[in-house]
Image (cartoon, rainbow over all chains, first blue to last red; front, side):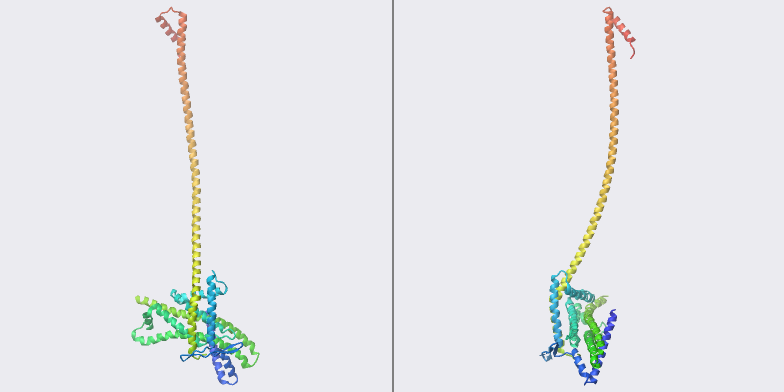
Length: 301
Length: 161
């Protein structure tokens, strides 16, 4: 069952890549006629300094700190919107849940997710020591989920569909993986682990590989989330774009039907990718937290 | 879409860290605590129920055992009572029989004694009467040795009983 879904998602990502390619080809080849159209459509998945609303575009401020462009762009707005909605709703839920003997309605739903994250993600992968990091894991799950879901609203955008946002999340995941590993197994074991446990002659080869391995995990997290979230949007845009390419209403029902189907898939993918990012982070943290305990047991033999 | 924008990365990190800190303090901690408290309550309640059930079963078994014991005791008491009653009855009967026999034999002895005494008295009376009669008949003619001889003769003639 899960394999089937994963295959579906892989294929959706693949098709997204093809769509990107064809879109670029189309944009490059016919810069005059359809090029403008595709450029316009792809603007939806690009960052911009304007916020589209039903009442027209709102210009966003340009900011610069220490020579870095810190402009409040479209994705920053959706980042903050997600954060605000998340913080407000969850604090309300926490207040309500702590007053009631048994949570009801929305509070109950949130609690099911919290319990799921605790019992199915944190405890099996990180053990009881993982409870120290549960705030981080829970926030990762809910924040990514909400950012994913925001892309499904009209005029909304998935902040996670931008590689910089997912890179930021991956940087935090990278830091958390290292911090948890160092805290649980000590600096000495952490560094020893980087040598791969081989003879010192091999160290010049092993150490760069192990260090690279640390970064690939986070890099994979970043690219996986970004590609999955932007891929679906591009496929939807491409399918809707077909209507304008063929300049025919006959194509519209088929396109719209596919887009509705894809939106359903996107809804599922929004949950799935939040789960995948979270469980992979938990697994990576768990590996770092347990590997040395395992290794020291081997040493003691 | 793929262009690197350090500002967005930094904004993401800042936002995420703030969200983690705020939610960690105001949402996750109370929620997890409430969850654990409720789980503990449920666990405790289940354990108490289990204990209460065991206790109830134990009491029931005890009651059954006590009842069985009481029944046995009652049966034993009744049996013993019957045996005792039987024994007492037999004893009383035996005693009564003995008593009756005693009374009877005593009565017979008494009768025998009375009879002998009466006979003896009768014999003395008869002897006296005989003497008086002989004296009347003979008057004062006879001397003492003759008188004695006659009396003895009369006595000899009297029936032996």
